[in-house]
Amino acid sequence: MVNLYRHIGITHKSQLAAHQEAERWAKANGQLVVDRQGLSWKLKTKQWQEPSLEDAKAILWLVSLQLTSEVDAAELVRSQIFDHETDARLLLLLGEDLVPLALRPLSFSAVKEIDAIQEAEANILPYCRRLDAANIHELKHQTVCRFIDNKMRFA
Image 1 (spheres, rainbow, N blue to C red):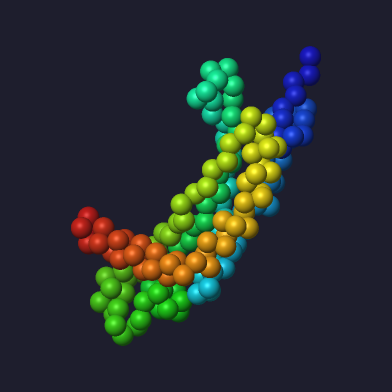
Image 2: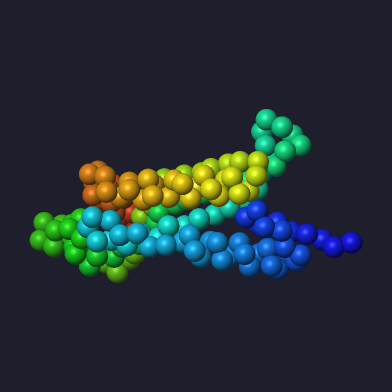
């Protein structure tokens, strides 16, 4: 008997082929997005299966999208999140550390894997447009200040 493995609506004869197809899809959908201030964000995709809460015998496919980035002090000044003169103390406290930035992830679920993937693909562009929002500058500033506060508290 031949075992068949599925990924993205395609049936493969081996688990390795299905895994390679999953990696190919993840690489194709893991792209760089640049915001208004010129900061590069990476679009991370993740897919997995979970049992359905409504039906004990059903399995749901989930796909998650998340924009993430890392910034250092030089990038914060270059992208005008911090001013070199007015925020000199904060930049000194930050030092050489990289600050992780992330937008809240979006998740999509469906009974069929291909449906979850198609729904995620349909929402990639609107999700990336969140970087054009006016409050993204303030979000970055608050995240960096919170990072510095935690660094000083637990250093």
